[in-house]
Amino acid sequence: MPASAPARTALSDVSFLIPAKIKPKAGLPKGLSPPSVKERTLFFRSFACLFRAGVPIERSLEILSEQTTDQGFRMLIQSMAKDLVHGHSLTAVFSRAPEVFTSYHVRMIRVGEMSGKMDDALEQLALAEEKAGVLSMKLKSALTYPAWTMLIAMGFLLFVPPYLMDGLFDAITVTGAQLPMITVMVQGVFTVIRHPMFQFLFAVGVGVFIYYYPKIVHSEKFKSGLLTSAVKFPLTNRLAESLITARFGRAFSTMLEAGVPPAMALRLAGEEVGTTDYKQAGVEALYRLENGDDFTRAIERIPHLRNYFHEFLKAGEETGTMADMTARASELAEGEVDHQLGVVVALLEPAVMVFIGVVVGVLVVSSMLPMITVLQTL
Image (tube, rainbow, N blue to C red):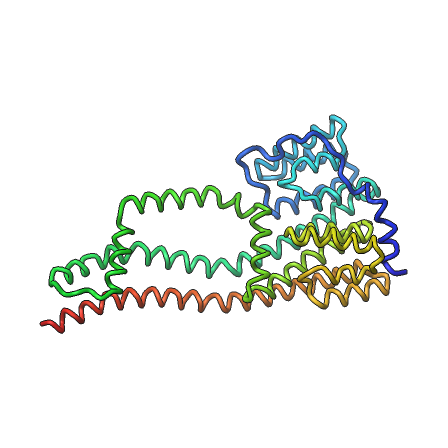
């Protein structure tokens, strides 16, 4: 039976996916960053094991709070355990910390509560977090070398030459020789860099950056903006599309395996991608299903998914193995991410070297030209 029919009939019966509301308290203590993907993966996997072993949920959370090394996460889990004792549902206590648990996590917990398969839901969440962590680690490891190379080189070129070449420029100026324009410009830049006010502002800027960097990098707004920009940039367009397909396919297949109706799984998968466009695209796809579009056609209108994802989805819809086929498409997209990362890094490394070479070349030319001028006047 095509998946579009049950998807449309399920549209009016998705209230069980809307998490219960409680008066929100502060999730993480102020000033603390969200836990790492590794911490969340361990949390969900351990939670699933404890649940299967028959340990009460309140006691499970107490045990989980003791095993984590993240102070803020520990305090949050302890607070969640207290809320459970006070009569709140597990979905409600998860929804109180949106900076740690996304709407995707909350709805998966809700599915587990309503279906009686909480251990399966937790295991699926652990698997999804694990795959997300692998992708994140690949991105970081691939971009770390070019980033550090650029940072160290720019730091050296920014602060060492102004002091090494200052005496040379002064000696040339004393001779009365007219300095070339490029030398005058470089000398002006060096004068600004040596100024105490510039160095003070630079130090303050570095301190502010170090302080706010973890918060900015972990914010959903930053991640969404970065992914949106990567899609528009020709060099990273293919990589971004593969990454979007991997995230969308992984979330969609996980939801289907947990028993979420396909239509709602489509919307939640759009939210999991993280960009505003995809959240809206998921809602629009849901609207099209409600108005009679078949499932495959509705997904074809979602932007930036790789073509093979649509083919895999269509095959899954025809054979009744949609969850399995979308999971396979997600794995294929993750393989593409590996390949595209290699391509991007292979292009970035020579680009960094060329940039450094240009800067060094400007410094060499700015110092050699006036020396040649002085020698010609002798």
